[in-house]
Length: 117
Image (cartoon, rainbow, N blue to C red; front, top):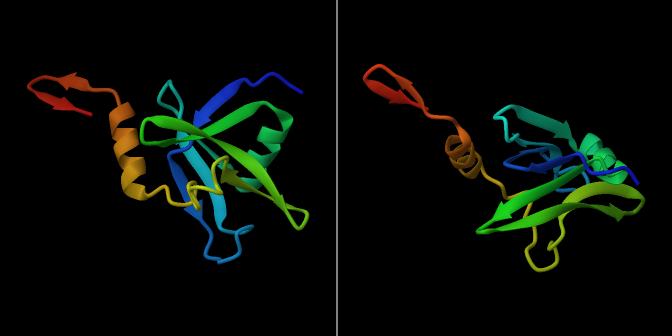
């Protein structure tokens, strides 16, 4: 297995409009430590986890929860590692949570008299 090069925290989940758990996540995205954005389709994220090159987590309160690959009926999809006790942990990342996380990560820029994010 390859060495994990990228540890990424998921801040946004783009949902597909389906009640099927295999099709509910279209893509995941977040912000790197250097403030650049990343985004992967569910299939690409699954491939990266399985290759061992990327590890994805979500923030739940003060703890980080791993995102893992789950197989159902031969199909692979993403879920949190604590899915049995916290159903839909991953799918419930809201736009408000994502905006708050990204605002906290945004650098503060001094421009004359005003401070901008």
